[in-house]
Length: 270
Image (cartoon, rainbow, N blue to C red):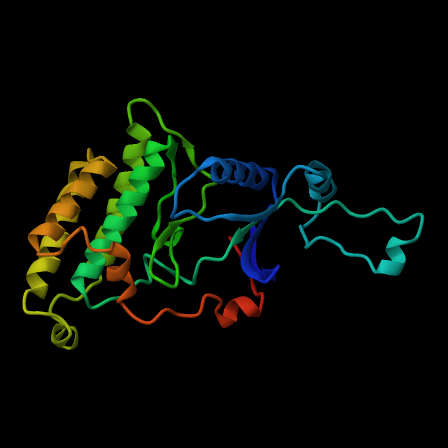
């Protein structure tokens, strides 16, 4: 799978290009899931090219190293013997932001609390629509310029099973990610302590303990995690009726939606 960043129609987009039949299958799965999901907090499709010419393109490139789609000079295209090369299968998604759950940094415990709460609420809504993500990692939870979590990479998603076993895998993966990011948060950093109220170590310890206990049970549904985090927020004195988006926006001023790295249209390989 090749991934590149570029501008299309005035929007920043992430373009995923298939290089193998397996990649085409993943892109088709992601396109199918994103097309039918009707919830906020997931990546959105800008454009797609998966069917017309996709098989021809794979046949033409099956024996050679994949290169970007060939574009002939307009004069050559007008020649009667010219035959355009089929376009590579690709899926273009709207750019979300350069940060993810693993790069989120905040000296405020309540922002960690509400960020994780929002992540599990998003996972709960996803399961309610009958979809299991199947590949929850820190890098697959993107943060936009207002620190709102957004799920991406639905190429391994599957239908929700009646027993909920597959959904439990999503919850366990997200709890594991939460443990990892919280473990890296310093509890007694004096610089951070000046920017927090006196109960910071206690609240952080409670959040870490809750996430750890839920992860060890391996039986928690997303709704249960949401309930536990909501209770912790209420016990700490935070009103859940307050706009949660405001809690997350208060971390720092919003960064530009389109960073310089996107304007350079650099390429990466996964």
